[in-house]
Length: 264
Image (cartoon, rainbow, N blue to C red; front, side):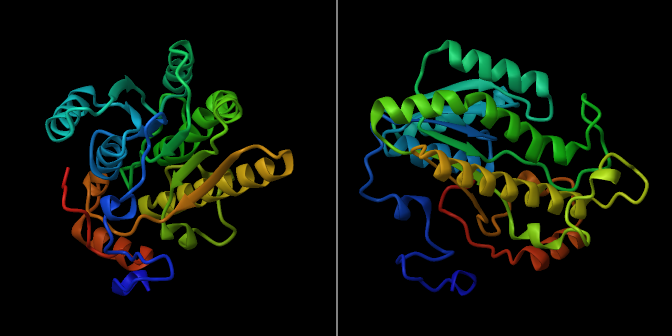
């Protein structure tokens, strides 16, 4: 059971690191986009993918932090292929610009890791007048995936290698209000509770991955789509939450405190 750190049938558990899970895998020739790669889970994902030979595009809002992370990884893995591109997932215009710029590079795309997120900020509307968490955690990634899907399909077809789309979600998706996503009150500041808004954005991530998987299967597209709960790793996603909120979030989400040896 992952919660107790006990290995399951895969041989891994909640205490397994990304390096352990990917040991022996050669990702040479693969290209990945990792959103939110300038800190936390995204930075560690970038490091380990680069360690395995994958060309990683860090899709990030904070370019300065991204450059620091890239420099640290190159110091450890001099052969790493890592590029940085600006992306603000709360802005649909930024998402469209990123996708257009990426396609203009003519790079292939094997892996899309929709990782970036924000948790329980004060009520805020994005520049598109959408509640910030729903915009950043879900809608931005939904649009990004849609705009890059043809590139992924072509890459899978031309390379003969199955593509992967991964939505980083959370066990918190189980704790929305009754009825799931409250579309009629999505942008209403009255009664806003940050953690519940986070939960419904994570439910949306899961529903997105489920629908993608269904369509890929029906259309015989060589791409898989999955959502995952990464476990409880204390990163700066909790920067808006109080100690009480963190305790509540840990309880709701079934989080544990283990992480890999690298802390970003």
